[in-house]
Image (cartoon, rainbow, N blue to C red; front, side, top):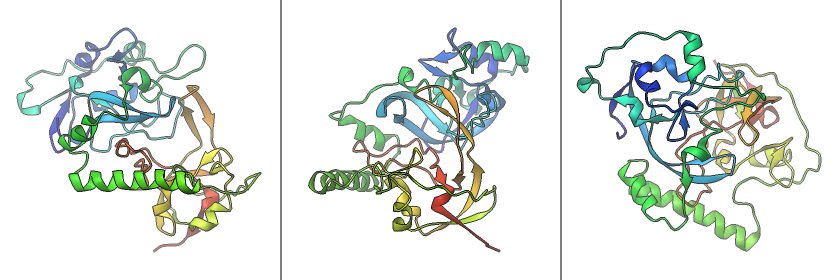
Length: 301
């Protein structure tokens, strides 16, 4: 299933038949937030051959998975997590509409869905696709040159596009070894980083401050009160963007716990592309998280 292919999400009962007792297929959970898309048609926006993973912070090999349009998790079954991660779809959960003659057996009761698709463990930890990516993937060797071929075949990148991504990642590594400049984040000098609350709301417009203005808010690890300003965010400096949503709570993958977040928003069309990743960036396109101190409110008619 390549980008541009129109597919239908199989009826929920068919999807459930592919899952093990933990509600996963090949280690990847089918989440309650995905059930509302069952029976509907969407367009494949991207095929994944690899993905980043936040628990062990590496690039991992993944098989037979696609993204559909810009479908993202709304967090309703996971404590209201607001990260808006893209949903992973196993090809076994999808069909081609013109060849699919299966009749939808109808909706399942909510308690039956909840029993099959676990979200929260008894100890208060959460289970989602992001927390389980290590189980659903395998390590990707730096010497797996076929990874680049798979990226091109799956249309993740064109040949010129892949060369540009690799060249920039290589440049960042060389600069690091020659000058010590970090290749993942913007380095600051603060010992105790400042904070600012703008109480930004969805739909408001903001200007992202300049690189030097933001640097003054960061510590030596590129963080503002624990949130890192990555090099992927630099291209947005000086630009004007609309606030998509506030980020006040999210699941932190390494601990599987829901944590509170302060003075942070998500901006429209601001996603991480893993510019520093030598394997060719990251196709996952997680939203960047913006501290309000990195932004200034503007009016735009």
